[in-house]
Amino acid sequence: METVVEARGLTKEFNGFRAVDNISFDILRGEIVGLLGPNGAGKTTTLHMLLGLTTPTAGDIRILGRNLEKDREEILSRVNFSSSYVSLPYSLTVWENLSVFAGLYGVKRPGEKLKGLIKTFEIEDIKDSATRKLSSGQITRVSLAKSLLNDPEVLFLDEPTSSLDPDMADRTRKLLKDIKEKKGLSILYTSHNMKEMEEMCDRIIFLDRGKILAEGRPSEVMREFKGASLEEVFLKIARKEKTCFDGADG
Image 1 (cartoon, rainbow, N blue to C red):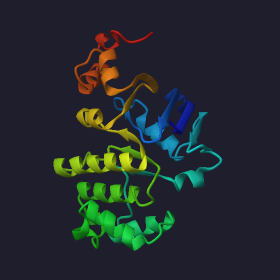
Image 2: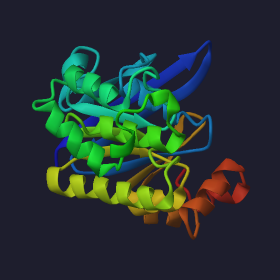
Image 3: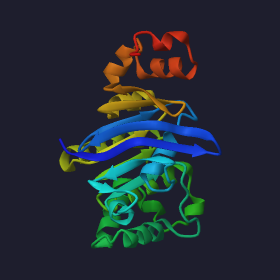
């Protein structure tokens, strides 16, 4: 199967502090990979390096067969990103925000695309509202709509459903899995909702203190750390219980 994201020896230091410590991993086409770990584990820094927002101290990144450092513009035209924590221009309306991004991505027939995504994420009633007036859940839906404007081949999602009500969160997960199955979309997914990660992810990468602590299918990670659920594994690692390493390699 085709590899669409390759990270090799990825390292990032801030004033002598190593936030990400020599990690390597791949993402395959049509695969959803979950990036997990306690706060400060290095998840956001890793995402920012993959998006070209932060320059690695060391290591190489290849996305869709191209080097991120050399071919950043081409790569970014074929990927996208959504986060519950990224602000959109507050003075613009929802429609204006999405129109600007559609122009940046060179979307053909942008009006048609916008209407479809606005309907999908049920934001028709706020499309003419200034972004500053929106609730956190509404902004999340707008961000998700933005992330699908260019029909990305790779999607980076940082806590994409954290502000959504259970109904919209469920429908968003189903939509993403449907796009994955039909179009081979690859997703790197972070969330603190462990049940969501079990449901969504083909594979899990567990970070702790900037290093990869475990990698594999959710069931394999649970078995390695003797946890009945990903939540139990997460708590063991986050609380640094001695038993969290029982059965782990090395």
